[in-house]
Image 1 (cartoon, rainbow, N blue to C red):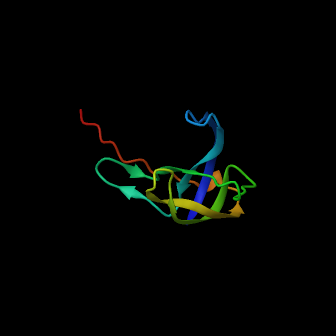
Image 2: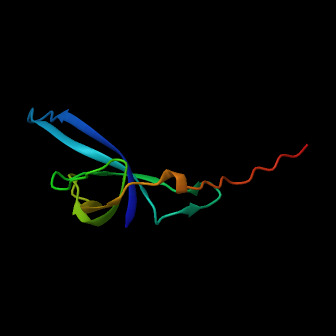
Image 3: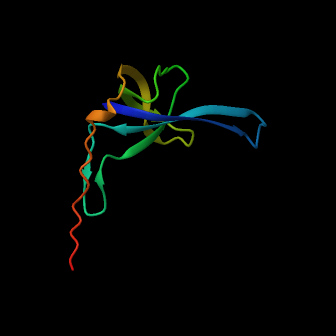
Length: 107
């Protein structure tokens, strides 16, 4: 899937049981191939996913091809996780066209 990565946030926490410091990073992105049109939401949706240490990103913001795969989370549940990211290019924000829903005002 092609995505626009627009944010990367590092996190850190101390495991209360072991005292071990855990660190990671969370990616924020727009799936450029997914669009929702419903009564409650219109447009592109943002998503978050953990960034594995072996996946590198050269540019943020940047357009990437993500490969997602089923992975087991720390609670033992299956979820889609990031397997790889291929840099496709820098975003061209001048070409982005936003068409907001029309709002009709009545007098």
